[in-house]
Length: 205
Image (tube, rainbow, N blue to C red; front, side):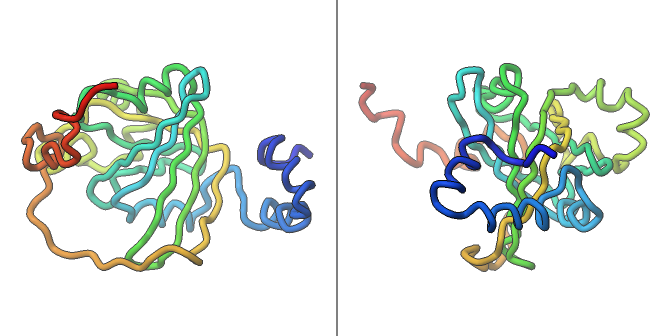
């Protein structure tokens, strides 16, 4: 049986004397699919962190958010999430076109203070492609194509290869507070944070 993980992590497990502990984690905490508990957890999340890399291995990490349940676990191996209008750079999607490996980290800071890693192979779908597939559209909520009046520009489908816990040990507990209505896909400068880091006027080097 091929062990999960990379050659590099296995080498370091041997070097640092962690192999037995790591093997226990692989055996007891890592799955190659989403079990019912994981799917229920994903269904109530409002955000996740997305990691991708281009064909040369140059990495990028990004943030995705939506209303609770905006990420849809269609079954134990497939999940999809919407891509709304952004800054136009499409860094994550561009990476996916070169290198399909993607990692999603869901963290519940408010209720259960726990995290879930989901690693897999990603591909981009248009709205029409998603809705044209009976396998996908039948499993989605009726309001799938619209959130607060904003329609996703496209979707990302992830075929799950690894799913495992991120322990609660150092996750801070946060409190969700009421805020003004979020504007999905807006181009409003103030709503997007403006030039918060003053990069526009900073020298180019």
